[in-house]
Length: 603
Image (tube, rainbow, N blue to C red; front, side):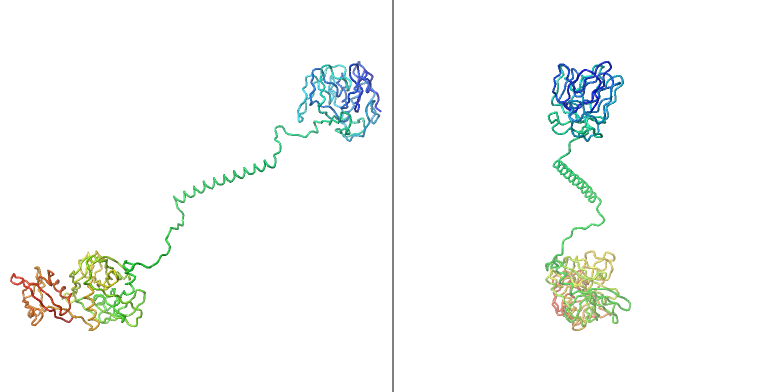
């Protein structure tokens, strides 16, 4: 058992594991452990902690004792519930306790604790050190938070040390609900176990089942830290993050898309695809230009002519299923008698052709292709039915551009024109009472059809008025100025029939020689004929009608005549044996005569 401490005044009896007796203060007796408490201190209070070691010098407050006067005891004032603290250092001259000995009187024996007691605190020089677990000195606030370690109390003034378990000083309230503080026992505690400084007393030990409080074993928590978030709060925060992220992505996408769209609108891209309508029906109304062209083009051909000294290109159209094709004389003239003519149809087929007949006075010719199937003859109209202003379509190969279609109107009728005359003797001059049109006609259109709104042929395109040389011939290479001329189909039909049937055409004549040098108004009959013969052929149509040399013909069938060429044109517009009413001027008097047209063989 422990040796008795140094002699001194008797102290209160301990109810828990007794603490070692404090070292005797110099000059005073030390209280006996387990002794009777001093006068005025009630006995029987439970000991909640083993008092800590007393300081080596000077009186030290007893562990678990009453706090100094004026120090309030709060609910946070710790009371020790654990095993007793280590015994204080022995006072000078006193005996040292025996390790493993019997505990002092009043200390209950119990099972050995597993905690190793901590060594006794070192004594402060010059004064006693405060006992761990004791009531803080006067003026030290109690109830510090669990996570804060209270600062060490100031060293007490020298004086008698209170007995462990003694009654607190007068006026000092005792807190019954202050949480206990567990203190370490000495290296050799009263139970004889080592190395367990924080062992707790058994359940049901003295102190009414209070749990010991150790600030060093309390869960640590950083100052200012927040409690852990619940899963629901985490989910809400995650949802908010997702919503914000989606909103940001949408905003950025909108900004990028708007900027890109604006850039593309201003600058475009490398590849542009333009809107386009789908494929529609190719059918067109029959009266439209497209409808007319669709009906007429299969019957139109292009002629390529080559001869010994010249070559040329023109147009023609199919007359019948036998391969007869009508065109202009000046188109096939370069071929002569030994040239070559190639016909190209609108579908691209080609065939060789031969001249059946031609007439320079009418500027018409017929060629024929053989062994060609699927021909599409055009329907012939009636030029007498044509009126100024009627819509027309011209088809040909201007400048060798096959299947060219142009459109216009009939701008005039019975326009007397002459074409040719390159030979100089007048044998190659053609006289045409033409239909005038503003449909563009160019070199290469010669011999092509001029059709009405029902795709019926009403004329043969033959000549244009050129701006460069004023020529009426379509042989020039000048472009159209909107003055095109076509041989009326009625005349063309008669000539074509004669050329097909007889190989030559007949010309209606009045049997007189005209004065081409006359400059006055009308057509004057010459004084003498060619080769010095009479100007009026004996027994000819004119002679039978009573015409005389020097007569001036001013009208034909009521239409004025201003020149000899106009008279020829008007006569050629009729057939032989047609009856004409003429107005003549003789000796300043007008006369009316009637004659029947004769015929002359063409060249």
